[in-house]
Amino acid sequence: MSNVGKSTNILWHNCPIGQSERQKLLGQKGCVIWITGLSGSGKSTLACALSRELHCSGHLSYVLDGDNLRHGLNRDLSFKAEDRAENIRRVGEVAKLFADAGTICIASLISPYRRDRDACRALLPESRFIEVFMDFPLEICEARDPKGLYKLARTGKIKGFTGIDDPYESPVNSEIVIKMVDGECPSPKAMAKHVLCYLEENGYLQD
Image 1 (tube, rainbow, N blue to C red):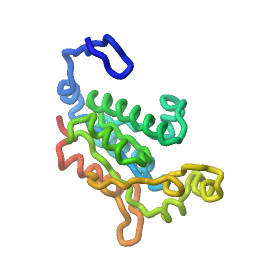
Image 2: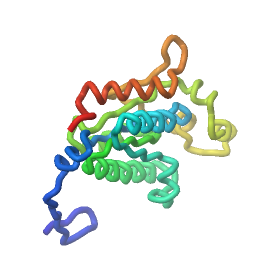
Image 3: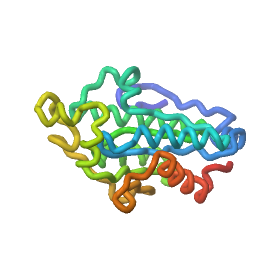
Image 4: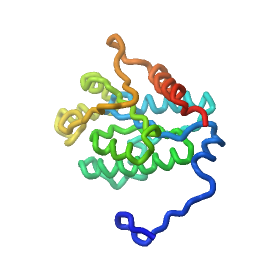
């Protein structure tokens, strides 16, 4: 029996079917692909394109999208710093479960604070957390502004908006960095292929 956080007298129950058995069933290695970047950097676009590429090649994945999760699991959280930290913590724990199930979990969130991303990385064995940094300039992301949020932030109608009046702490050691090539933004398919090549080269697409 143990105490974890505010939970007392709890016991971890092991199951005879573990991650290795599930991975053999699926023919892949469970992992977390954590896509981080400014709003409008293409995180969700990449997540969906990558999920499609994996599906077409016979691999099971699941996308945890930041906005989608705030419709349910994280609907009680605001965008204050402490709630953002809790938002990332919850997603990290859910992503860990997906990886343990043998699934390639694609988490797509701004996740602006380095310490929160590092805490999620620490939940998994080092090789099972793959950070993808969408390294696009603020002016490019703001020009896209798919949800009109930058405009609202610039006029003061949204406070604490990442990149405008709240910081984004860029990763320093991401496994994958997606950036402009010859002044052009890569296509969704090209970005997905970039990540897919990493997965193939590092043995994630076999058990």
